[in-house]
Amino acid sequence: MKVLLDTCVIYPTVMRQMILGVAGAGAFTPLWSERIIGEWLHAAARLGPEAQAQATGEAALMAARWPKASVRAAPDLEARLWLPDPSDMHVLAAAITGSADGILTLNARDFPRDLLAEEGLWRADPDAFLHGIWVAQPALVAAVARQILAEARRFSKADWQMRPLLKKARLPRLAKALDDL
Image 1 (cartoon, one colour):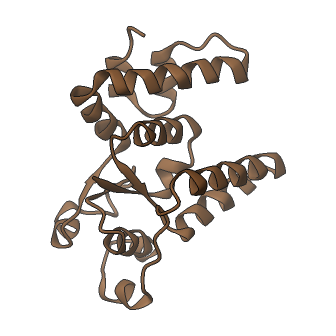
Image 2 (cartoon, helix red, strand yellow):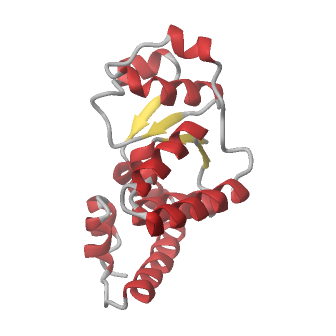
């Protein structure tokens, strides 16, 4: 299964780590475009040079890990598409070009299911998507979550617990499912 990641699911660190960790474990193949990565880097730059450098490094690691993940849509494809927010057209075009099965986004309003279905795509929010993978493969998702929890504790030098960490990352259903870890 191929899933295009919208900028809004790449930018929050823990959310990105969960999504890419599950992808790295083989649950699905992630896709993105240069423009999506560029939007992430632009947002990170607003937090300062350190955040920008970190995001640039992480983007390079993503590109190395998934060298075929970046897709480039033809401009004429975008011209034939319609979404409520024209600035999201590039996301839909990249999903179509990459033969994605769906789009992972927090932006439900601007990606109506009926319009996506016309292109053979579905839309999911990261919490529901990851929870669905947890239902099918709980050990896989739990292993990724444990690794992210350990990393959060190491980097922040705080005693994070799984549920608050995932809830803060806007993954409340997954947080509840993994609360026992």
